[in-house]
Length: 436
Image 1: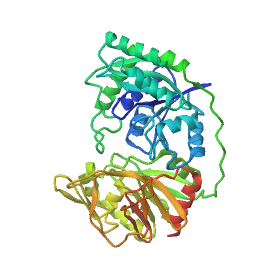
Image 2 (image 1 turned 90 degrees about the vertical axis):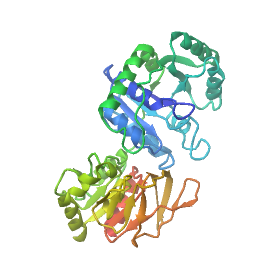
Image 3 (image 1 turned 30 degrees about the vertical axis):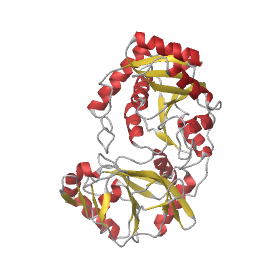
Image 4 (image 1 turned 90 degrees about the horizontal axis):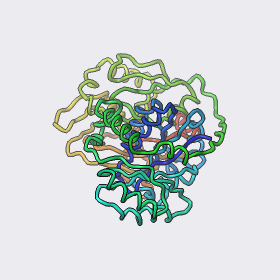
């Protein structure tokens, strides 16, 4: 038996992420190997998880994949772990359509108990009907316990615990109100891996959790039997080498994608920021990231951009997602109006002037092949080019949406963060790129 549970909340901004990070650290300090997960397509929270846990955090998403895949990812990564900690997304029952794809659905699929985080800053006994409703709305969801956040002190907590008792929900304790318990803005890269401010917040959260939350009761309440993962077969591509950009500017790629690439061939990492040469490989993959934060450094690394251009002209294949797409254009304009030359593989340019958030699930059909993923960016293409593929992108509700995918003979480039964590889909996508 191991421990596994899902951290959820009635709504966003309840403190899920800070408490999740604090719990990861507190449990690690008990000598436990904590494997983090994240419901949904988000990549910023998993980057935080990974920095604290010391191992990759995996996305669990039944819209981008399916139930069998979610189970397989969870069981496979829990093989060597003591505790599985899944951070939910938005409110417990919030999904792409009603509760479809929600934290509640993931909890049901995996049979995980739910620990609810309730922001109690402006309430007391009124949390009783809230807890009662969340506990009884769907009996298939095991609401096991609650941790109260932003509590004024022991007197305030007594009201909250009485409310939890009357609602039939175990209270594990609370996290006191503390203005220092705030991560920086989630806007593009301001609160990423391992920076000192983030780690200070996590340290404080862990200290407060150790003082005011009953971790032994949490562990005794969340025992779970882990199933053996399924074995999968695949076509041998042992000679395939894929160079994946990984540095401060390009730091997001679904870990399940990397796992699948490693089953098909070899992954070699390189840095567009710091290296002057590219690795010997068949495909260069530029993941999402924050090129706008390092635009000058990327632009100044002329040796790297020339190496990429030569690779493409010689027939090398390139894949670029979001931040990687911005890098493969002619130039990147920042908020302050400064413009920096980029790799110049395509004739489009991107800009952060008058930026506006665009996000959501996306499906793209390439012939008979459906690919799913997520779009999340503030930049936009301000000078387009003629290399658009005639692929239609659709939202989770099936509505067509503008999301250009640029294709040259050797290259795929788009804002699309594509999820290829299922081996068959990665295999199909790699074949598509290699045969283009």
